[in-house]
Image (cartoon, helix red, strand yellow):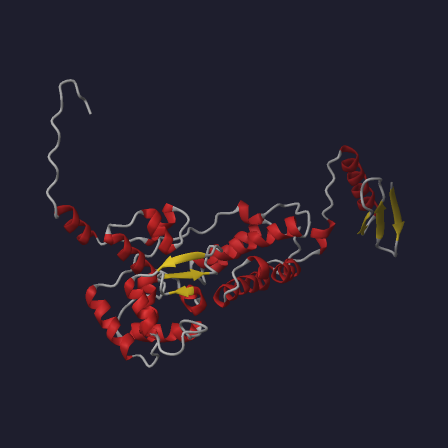
Length: 349
């Protein structure tokens, strides 16, 4: 039953108490508005259509982001420093641009405007990741926080930027020779070790820097990665060359294998690339190089190749495998084709 009370000259407070529903209240500027709202809510309650959206109407995007970063993200995202830095930055940017809106008021038009504004500032891939994070926050609000969202998830109602074309940057032999010279000249004695290890194992930068000696078995030739990008631990086979690199590392065989901070390695790598006069080459491209080299061997199945890379699907593995067409041409022409079998009469194959 609805109770309507006048509170001041321009306020009418409505309170509705009905069995099976928690008490709800709302304040309006006129009695007409108050009565109309009360009748609408009571009608929906009677028909079983009422949804309490009061929580979304008083919770801002900034408030739900704060809850998300405290209650959810630290326990459900990889805890490596670089990963934590990424999701914190994405949340901070969303909070800065959209934080003032109430959850009930944020619609797809507002999110689309945010998308278009950000596309003028950063890449499509960055905007796509920010929208994905916003969608995760909306899922947290609904599933974990139990907040009814009358407009649903606005991210699902807009066009999201494309994933972009996968990178296929591989150094030529001349570029690689120049790059090796500059890596060896670097004041950071661990740079060349890190580069070689990346090429021999196909491990990501974060995986290399997170690897500890207690997780390396040189006798059996494997390295155990506890934290990976897809959230699942994996065991990486070590080539003979990878074992040689690990054995050649200076210092005691305890603690962190590559004793560098992420930004230290980043700056040393970027400086070597610049001195070698190489354009558009990142540390992550070493992973492309590693997987492509393994594929070019020709003696590993895709399942075996995925043991190195950690990819769950063939499609993702193909994005990282870029074979040299010249090498493939030599391979297919190295042996004469087998003579075709004569067709028997009546065969249409």
